[in-house]
Image 1 (tube, helix red, strand yellow):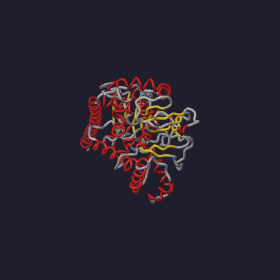
Image 2 (cartoon, one colour; image 1 turned 60 degrees about the vertical axis):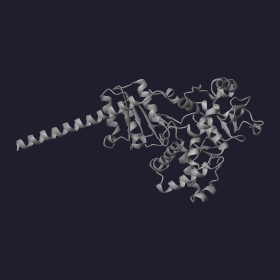
Image 3 (cartoon, helix red, strand yellow; image 1 turned 30 degrees about the vertical axis):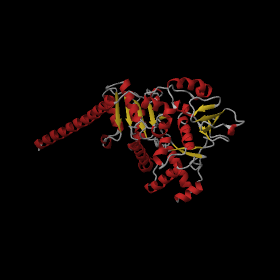
Image 4 (cartoon, one colour; image 1 turned 90 degrees about the horizontal axis):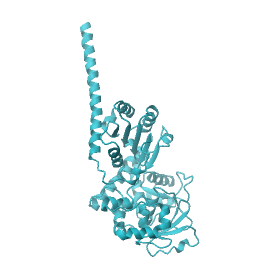
Length: 423
């Protein structure tokens, strides 16, 4: 009897020992995987946001669409600041490890091994991510965490309410300036809106001495927004279509609890809006065309705006409700227009989509009484070609024309491409 107990104890100790070794091995594998990915990361081109984020705050979130470069930016920051170190580690929460291990337990183990900076990718793929991040924040004040997730992440409305703890930033696709640097190795200065409005003639003249931005502008509108173009426009557009399908078919049902049965209706709405010049939604007609209710159409629009598929333009940014109709709807970026349509997009729509997309990153944009856009409740813009006169803005203070097809502007007429230098 005693001998049997002894054998059982030895057996259980061995099992426990094997379990500990197994856990250590898994942790070790994750660290090796992190080191390998960091080593392979290039620092040749970095997004402008990398220098603006408060990386040393205790909890920082980065939201953005699939494909805009969130993962690369995390890895670049780790490589340039820490290299291969026990202090910093990259993990992705779609790793199989986290199907059987909690994030909180991992963080505790990471700290015990000397970890101080944890970089977490794809948090939206992990159940209860917000609750566990809150627990990590409250339990381990010595640990700094940066996490990335889908554009659809809701910090304020998540069950844990991370809004008081996390600083959350959005990463858009490439600006025109970033595209020129990545694709053509042309380095242009990052400009503020104030600098453009006050000094655009001088700035454009100096830039045009060394480079002709218009030679690359149409190219950017087609293939410049996402940092994965590799010389084949058809494959690039196919990858964009896959991103849109991923958002509509997987992320919306998962993160907004939409019914999969509405996927075809959302795609139909997307196509209708892509064909418009630009789209001023008549919700009643749309609901008849798509065979659904007015309320559901407005919910679709809201979901797709949250997901960075649409940009919605309202008369005011204050008190916008779920069922409020936008004045205009745009696809989020010009590359979407080429990927969704079967024909060349309307030039006017392209110009307005570009302008909205480049300014919305750091500015408030609303629909004005006159003109196309009101920026920061102060500056009114009309968007058009080089022959646009701005007659529609007569009598409007702080009014400008953003004109396509111009290398250098004059007076209140500013080259459209210059608004691609804002980030």
